[in-house]
Length: 248
Image (cartoon, rainbow, N blue to C red; front, side, top):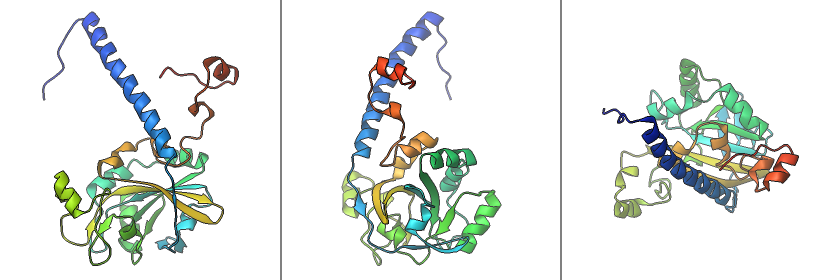
């Protein structure tokens, strides 16, 4: 691997300023995209999904744990697998108590769901030292309906909003080709309004890389970061209100 070129401090600052302009452009574009994501319409869930957790059977509404929002991480772990997906495992290794606390402070729960039976999930979770919520969707339509388990015999095949023919035309047939049932990763977000649960967002494939710290998870949800300074304000008004003012 080649190393960066060695230059003078003056040359470095000039190059850094050029890059900073591009970084600011990306930040503004990301903020605009996050706002557009929050304006997406939502779909009411009218199917009774059942999962199995450490305390027994639970519904999708139960996964909220009394909070207003829910993020589900679709973990690749098939019923006949001995271990979970290495990439999904690496991602879950980074789910910390601090991350969950920050999400909970924003009325948002994060739950990992896989199709493997609960005993396999529990054993794998214990071996990894994980203590975040991890439930089994074994025997449920949940994974098929949210297009992270692909099997034509159960439901039309679709991944990342493309069917097989669309993937072929896009040059990405590998996304849906393979031995059935085929497990794929993703995130799905839900919003609870009273007793009703709504699906607000799902992302797949490289879209899963948008997550990181709690702010990045919250950016996927309908209510966003839920901070006053997130909305456009004048600099003087923000200062008077004690709201942090950052350069964009």
